[in-house]
Length: 77
Image 1 (cartoon, rainbow, N blue to C red):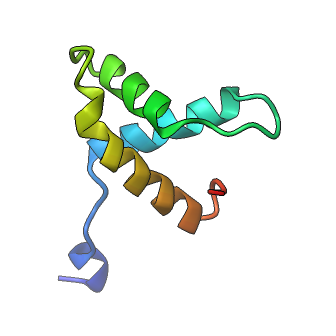
Image 2 (tube, helix red, strand yellow; image 1 turned 60 degrees about the vertical axis):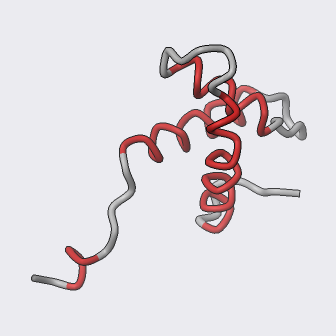
């Protein structure tokens, strides 16, 4: 077993959440930010969940955004 195979792999769910965040950022006007609440609602809607499901995803959005910022893919301010 190699060291590479021991590394945790990002789940499809996490990758999909990151893609949702990056899509919203790309669609935002230049110099504007996105609201984590909007990202959570968009992700829940994309998954076909009910209108209150976004609450579950809000903390996940923040975690994913921090990961994207650490990877240099977005800036959090």
